[in-house]
Amino acid sequence: ARITEIMLHKFKVQTKARAAVIDVTAQVRKAVEQSGVSSGLCCIFTPHTTAGVAINEHADPDVGRDILATLEKLVPEKGDYRHYEGNSDSHIKSTLAGCSQTVIIEDGRLLLGTWQGIFFCEFDGPRQREVWVKVAPGP
Ligand code: ZN
Image (cartoon, rainbow, N blue to C red):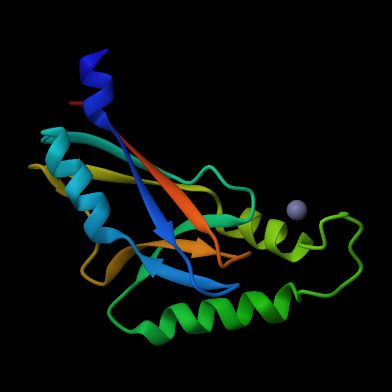
């Protein structure tokens, strides 16, 4: 049980806009370091129905901007939706992004491409959100 506690890491993300992508690569790296796992898999999961986790270029912030702008065009806030909460677009964007990502851990490090970063994606902010990171040792 103690090992499980160490390897499940949670952190909060405070978002400031209705839609945003927030680079959480550093928080995930920290979780991997704290786990002490040198080889395995890292699952990054967000337990929300109007948010997501994505991996994409984080060197140029315009990439995140373009992703959000295009999602907004594909799935506008107002549309032919029935969901009583009025945030159907947020649920649909969450489904498109997905609520988790998996990254390989090798030599104690996240095996990301040179330009890749891990983003928390907000589609119905501003809110306080959570990200859960599970680090699983493996061969
Ligand atoms: Zn809803």
